[in-house]
Length: 389
Image 1 (cartoon, rainbow, N blue to C red):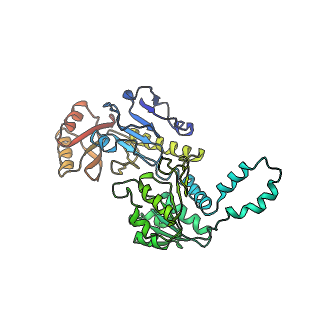
Image 2: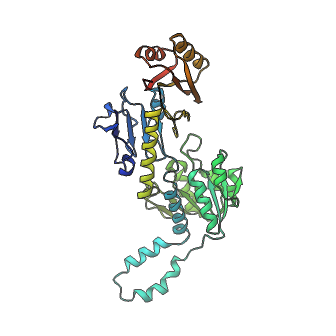
Image 3: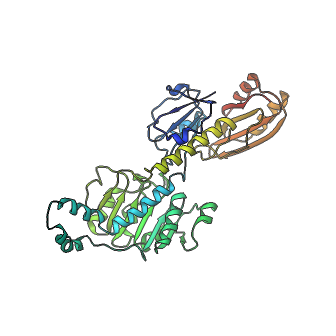
């Protein structure tokens, strides 16, 4: 019986994928796996029972991923599950920034009681006139699951699209419209584009990437959209860009005291992925990834461990998290051979300082052999996925 804990409400369509082999628990210390959305886990202490955390969403800044790796806890996320919802919000952001739709709606609400509102509308509407997005140059920084969808949608809207991503994946490249111009220098995005939207993860090298230096390279009157992570933009520099007239509008999905209520800022209350469909997709993906790890030892979409798959578990299987150092595979093989275990299949993958090995053997796994594997230097956690033949 596997036990799981939900730290936030998780869509029922996702939880329905759990079978009668799974039990929801109230105490996180009893859980093999945790499902989470926005709950802050950074200060939590984890019991030895916990082996997996699945984030129903893409961002994992609420999870201590490095500490989890050191403790042998695999952290999953669900990239792409909310991509369509965010893509649609980007399209909306371009429209509300290009045309003063919000200002116009607010004017109508303020004058709702005026019996002459129809006549006033014709006199006033020119104050809210804007520009169309067709024919404009759109720059997309980051061509992942969301960026590719934005690029393709923008092409269908008649925009000229430029994309920058030094780590463009093969899958993304195949999905990207051939009409999108792939540039190799982000400065080309800054200098050429009328609208710029950012879709990169929050990393040390992306924090504050849109700063005064980057803004100085942009076209006068640029629209800047950030629905990815607030820390990607130095917002003090963005406000300076707005005040100087360099930036026409800044659309962000992350309210704070710097941008909320500031002229030129359109601040959305973190609605990018807040659709029923996105929440359902994230929940289903998070649950299925956790189940695959618990039942088969397979790792897909982990942010702190390598991708490693060895199919459905049909017999005795070890899943070993260890440091990425030389000689580990040899030690596992030698120990198992000395104990009379024949290895029928093995997969090993590494990522940075960590590695993961799945080993199928042909005889039942004893507690004694598991303990001996655990005692090998640089082994972090040995998990028996299935014990018997």
